[in-house]
Length: 370
Image 1 (cartoon, rainbow, N blue to C red):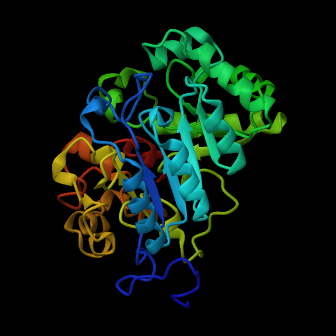
Image 2 (image 1 turned 90 degrees about the vertical axis):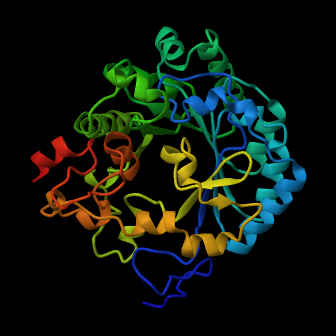
């Protein structure tokens, strides 16, 4: 296979299958400030420390984007916190669009800033709006403490529909909303949604204190299949947001795809980096709570060198897979599941011995798959 098959990047010489020579995808958290404090928020205590972070000014954004252009980054996700609280969001969008970088934004929909929304439409930004129930009481309980959150997000969506701005609905499925999926779909379709992103609740951040609201991997996968059938009746597309999406029926997935190990499973050290408000680089949102996982800073360090030589990234790339995964046909792609979930449960990202338990979210499901 020609290593220069894609004009945006080439494969590294070390491993032509699993590692790219540079990241192609950035997750950026411009602010940790937020109008909500969701029960399942993966940022968790970082939310309460939001004002302690120095956020990038316009000069920083210029330097940041120049670095991304040199790296040939072509996908950029803006997360938070609530991105609409970031005072330079309009400038960031302009710079990304000017450099032909594909943009996605995730918002909780509580801040109806028509200037930003109009830019989102103009620049064809992939906009995700977090709505977790068609029932106001349930949604407000989940996003707390904003008692008017459900009303505000509906006003936000109504404006999107009014100006014909496309959007997707992002929903974290949990014990409080999993049984109302059909009525929920009817509601969001009536609001103009064309795509539903069904998110598996990550056992990190605030969810660590609210584990009773989580659902098992088996429940999630079965619910996704059920939701997919319901959505089809309403011409609604549905996408999974889960490490184990390859377990789902997928016409695009094939083991013969030479990029399978890159496209599926954990993306740490393979395709993406997570960037905090001040430019600090972490492997993933699971690890932003501990300084020992700090890789460097995008405004101070050579990102290309960090990508190639970082001991932290190489630790993820070379982690040991449990023998318990050996019979699973997905083991090479999955690599023992989500390393973040394993770290939070067992204190390490890899199996210390070959008989160790892999990702705790997978172990029960795998027994049935095997």
